[in-house]
Picture 1 (cartoon, one colour):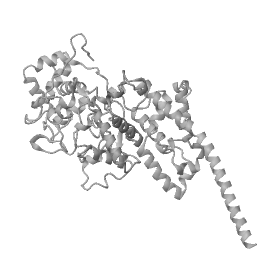
Picture 2 (cartoon, rainbow, N blue to C red):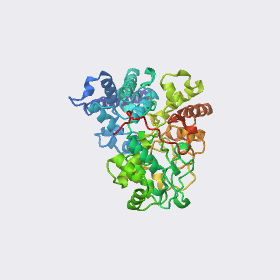
Picture 3 (tube, rainbow, N blue to C red):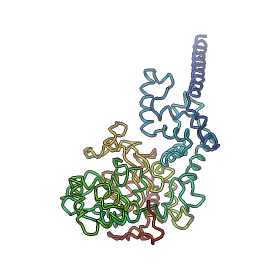
Picture 4 (spheres, rainbow, N blue to C red):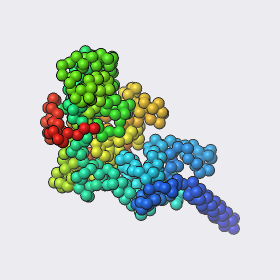
Length: 491
C-alpha cells in the first residue's frame, strides 16, 4: 500500500513537472515569436520568396538571442544558476558569429558577406544549430529538413546572384569558392610607376630593402621566413602575408590595421623594424631626385606632386595587378572536370564538410573576415612559447576584449608556396596547418590521416598564374605586362 502511494506521488510530481515544463515552453514560444526580428514593410526581401523562406527559418530559431548584443532575453536568463550558464553561452555565441549584420542585410534586401554566408552554410550543413540545450526550452526552434534546405538554398542563391565569377560553370555558381577573375580594373600608368617604387630600395632608411624584400614575386608573394627580416637584420614579430591577391581582402595585415592597399604600403616604409625610414618628406625627396620619376608621376597623376599619398597610391595600384587566376581549381570551377584529380576533388569536399570553407571562401579563399584563432579549442594555451603583442590580433586595433586573438582569415591562394604558415610562422608543413586548423577551428578535433592528405592535395590546386606564368616559375623581377593601347583601363 505504501509502495503504491509512493509510486502515485512520484507519478504526480512527474505529471506536475511535465505540466510546468509544458506551460513554460508555451510561454517561451509566445515570447520568442512576439520579440522576433521583423522586416520593414519596404524591405526588398519581402519580394524574394527564397530569402523570405530563409528569414522565416532563422527567425523561428531566434539566432539573435546568442549572436547579437542587447537583445531582450527570456526570463530564465536572469535566474541565478541559469544566468551563469547562459552568460557563458552568450559570450561564446557572440565570439563565434555576429548575426546582426546578416539580419541588417535581410532587412535591407542586400546580400550578407561571402564569409557570413559560408558560416551559416557550415553550421546548417553540419546540423550544429540550434544546440540541444536551447531546444529543451525552445522545441519550436528545431529546424526540420525543409527549413534547413530553405536556408541552404538561399545561401547558394545569394552567391549565384552577387558573388559568382564570370565564366564559372553553372553547377559551381553557388560554391563557397569562386574562380579568380582574369583581370581587375587598373590604372596602368599608376601601376607601372608603382612597380618601380615596389622595387626601389631608396624607400628604406639605409637603401637596402624594398617592398619585394618581404614580398618576393618568386616566393609566392612572401619571404618564406618565420617572421619578417627588416632593416639591419632586425626580426619582426609576425609572419609576412602574401601580396598576391591582396586586392581581394577586406583589409590588410593580420590584424586589419590598414583599410586598403595604399595604407598597407605606407606601413612598412616607416616601421623601424621593417624598412626603417622616419620621414615621408625624406622619402619623397629621394623619389623626386631620382631621374624619370617626375615624368611618371605627372603621367600617372596629372601633376608632379610626389608625397606619401601619391607614392603609396601608385604602389597600391601595382599591387592590384598581382592576381593569380587560372589555377587548376579555377579551371575545374569553370567546367574542366579533368583539371583536378579524384583525390583533389575528395579533398575539396572534405574541406567543406569539416568546416574549413566556413572561413576560407570567396575569390581568395580567405581575407573576407576576422576570426578567433582557437575558436573550437585552446590554441594559445597549448603553445609552448610566451605570448607576444602580435598574438593580440585584432584587439590591438579595436581595443575590444572580444577581438583578442582574432585575426584576418588568411588567403589560401598559392598556399603551397607561402610557408611557413600561421601568424607566427609556427607551422612548417601544410599537413601541420590542416591538422591544427581542424583541431582548433572546427568541431573535428582529430581528423583522419587520409583527410589531411586529401585536403593538402586540394590546397595545392589553388596555385595560379601571374601574367600567364605559373607562379612557381615567376622570376623575382617579373615585368608588368600592361594591356595594349586602347584597352587601357583608367580609374
